[in-house]
Length: 309
Image (cartoon, rainbow, N blue to C red; front, side, top):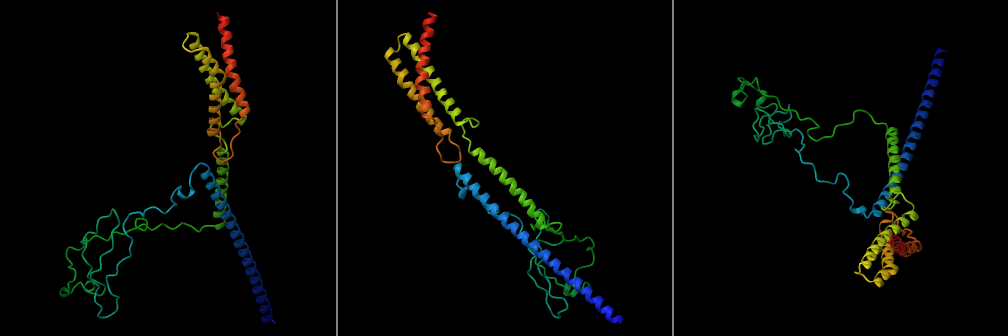
């Protein structure tokens, strides 16, 4: 009876372990599926960010194909070659094996002096089980025992000095790394949106509206035209320039020059960096400001001169 109870208890224990194993397997499978979906989502986001950066680069006149070299494509880093420990002895325990000669010693790291007691370039001719294994036999060329107590030990070359990358300290959690990648992707999207907003603003008066920018440019060129027409008026008063010339420049010449100059400036520096759409330049407003402001300013100058006289 007791054996049947033990058998039933064992079956219950095995059934519990089986269910726990199946649940653990299902949990790991679900976790792997979730990690795979996250990786695919981040991959799509990175592709979209790359396309957005290419679009911004083309907007500022930068060719994405020649923008720069990818990381790791530069010239190789100079340094001492990394090689393993050369084999300079036969396998121990094999009778009659002769030592291997002509094999150079281990390379030294950059910045370290050669090992004292071992001349550079001399081949290693002593192997395990050869002459070095019998120090008391002088006929086979054993090392002398006198004056050898202060022989320097070989200099150990660390993996970092040899150029081998150090391993990470602990295990990396894939979920944590993916969460960090998602946060960096969010930061990249935020900076890309800021770059797009800056790229949509023109270089000339970026904080102003298109209407205010056009008015400011037209008024600026009209002011320059007014200054020039006042200079012509002063020249006409002293008899240097005729009245007909002043009237021609006042009614047609200077207003047309101001209108064309403002039109060109708005088309050149009033255009945003991204987007090929032509900016609004309000030609009717420019015509009124240029062809009305200059004659009115000259008429005001004449009235002021008459009042002062």
